[in-house]
Amino acid sequence: MGFTGASFYVDWSLVEGNPGHVITDGIWSLDEFFDAASQAGLYLIARPGPYINAETTAGGIPGWVLRQKAVIRSDDPEYLNATAEYMSTVGAIIERAQITHGGPVIMAQPENEFSTWPGVTDFPNDMNRDYMAYVEEQLLDEGINVPKIVNDNSVKGYFAPGSGQGAVDIYAIDAYPMRYDCANPSVWPTYRFPYDWQVTHKQQSPTTPFAIAEFQGGSGEGWGGVAQDMCGQLVNEEAVRVLYKNNYSFGVKIFNIYMTFGGTNWGNLGYMGGHTSYDYGAAITEERAIWREKFSEQKLEANFFKVSPAYLTATPHLGVNGTYGAPFSLAVTPLLGNGTRTNLYVVRHADFTSTGSTQYTLTLSTSVGQIEIPQLGGHLTLNGRDSKFHVTDYDVGGINLIYSSAEIFTWAHGSGSTRVLILYGGAGETHEFSLPSNLGKPTVLEGHDLEIKLCGSAWVVQWHVTPARRIIRIADLWVYLLWRNEVYNYWVMELPASSPIGNYSSPSKSLVVVKAGYLIRTAELTNKQLRLTGDVNATTQIEIISSPAVGLNGIAFNGEVLQTSKMSNGNLWGTVKYDPPKFKIPDLSNLEWKFVDSLPEIHASYDDSAWTACKKNLYTQSTAAGHPE
Image (cartoon, rainbow, N blue to C red; front, side):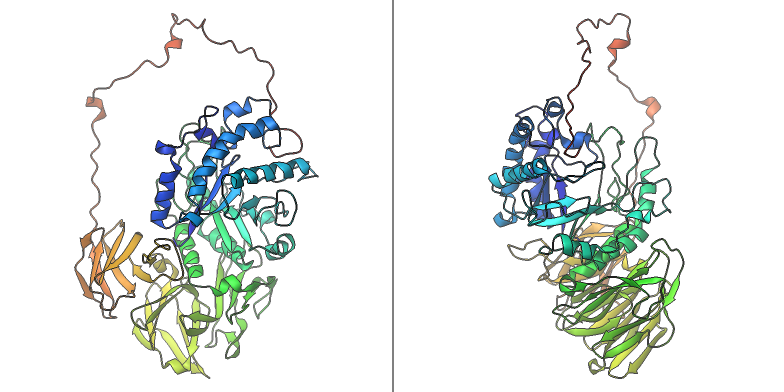
């Protein structure tokens, strides 16, 4: 997908069901999980709680703790003592997996969404601060020295660096603006949509990168609700384009999506209001399929940032309606180069919910002067519930892309001095890009219906997006012009590197770009052969778009060497044959069935005299005013 890491909770109630007995082996082994993350090349944010929420029973707090008289999530000594064995045991395991020891853990989060709630006006008070500091100290006592991060779902600056007792290293917010009305997925509840997070971040935590520790990646339903797929429709690919790019326009540097994969609530893991599925309408379905379009949209966005270091230093400014030559119905948010000459512009509808199409032009400053885009006539189009990144003076491995109205999927160094750049747009849109004239005249290698014109000291290329692919060569640069849905079939894979980088993501690693259908998992170059692993759901043509190997002459897929040949554009390709799996369902009526009488109490002869009588009329109130429930 292009993301570089994942966050994970540890559910206290699962591993310490009995007081003082923390289970850390077998299926509860975090060491096995950390090894798998290292093999997959995923960095991790550890979130051990002790309270985790996550729609789990009591937020992961064991039942035996709830039966105590202690006030949970407070500095009540009885509660703090109850957390000691769990936090010590799990903390020691996380400590061994820190990046400082070569492991995958790069950050740790004490507590979870420890923020204010309706009716409380003095949060955080001294007790709240003391409790937060205590949880942080529990992690420090076990040697966890990676940065500590907080997820403030109130966006109030709680526990930001410099805010006093309980402050963490990195302040992050937590937001679910699409809310949870899965029964009406076309209705966008904009009352929580953000407009100026770059401003609030500068006020609340100016010394840290803007971080979103949780942002809505799906939605959930409880008993009697609609199917999970409707939650996927609520937070669909359109919401990802509009809301995620809105976040990027604020200059977010750490962006964690909840959930990308939810899975299943096994046993009593989920809280009583939820049901067995925790599919969550996420990008990856409960059964681990990736057919939801937002998986592919997230892949497009993530891969753009992996090859766009200028974004990390660009300064985000306020988005204003009707600026840079756009009509008032559009908001343009600039991220202007700070140490680089690259500028990025995020364009969205001023009305987030708009389903109409708006035509526009942009007047932008570039290295060759101020330009109205498109230069070759016509207009750009922003369709309903869409948003776009436009760039100027963007570095493609030493080649200056003067501007592009089409969005960038990725670029990569190929063999020798070659580079490949992939641009895309929505069907029916008109787009332009421009490159310096000293590179030489563009040559069309594939496709037609392009307008190419020399404008001053720059070549300008304009095209109308259709499903048909175009390829243009300019000096040592190959530019692919694609329909957005076609790019879904393209995969950018980092090749393994030597230790300590290994399988972890790094801008220093070589890339291969392949067109390969449903899913590519890994890529490796061995003796001029590209070895891929992945999944297909149909007979699939694999085409090598870019590879650093000189003289690449073979492709293997899941261990099978493919018959390959060269396409007219020079790319190597081969075909993976798909054989649908065959399932034979047995005749259930002819099977021998066995059963156990698991309800002896329904029989008249059953004796219940040994049962404990439920006579307790009072219970312990484990929450109190002054702290979150």
